[in-house]
Length: 149
Image (cartoon, rainbow, N blue to C red; front, side):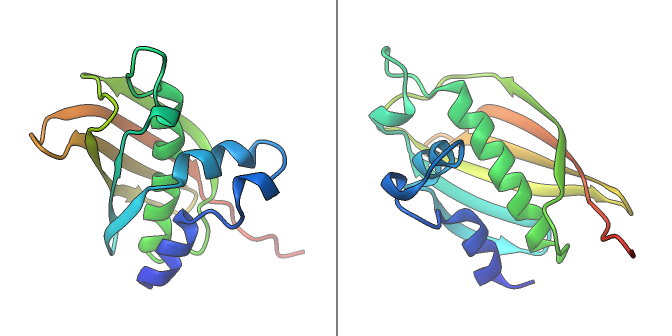
């Protein structure tokens, strides 16, 4: 497991002004996310909710949480030594609390299973100050196999 490879999967590759298409949202969300630790099958990150991550009432947007679950889930596969993050089949996301602007959120992704073709990761979002669970995701991925043609 190469922590630098995991870090590279989480860092935007260009500034938001340079990015076209749907990738712009990825850079918008991932900017400010810190990789706190990476080990085999586990990735721990944190970020502070900023106004750009929040709705008009100051609550963290569900789309930001979903994007983070997708990207951090993929990083967990890289941390496990799997050479590909695969293709997302399903992301199930349950919200149990809110987060507001200024709160620091800790996000922990753990590998639950990596078979020959399917991988499953859980991603927990917790308020860093209290440890209270804010959201929980399960990310199921098809781990694409290289063609032998």
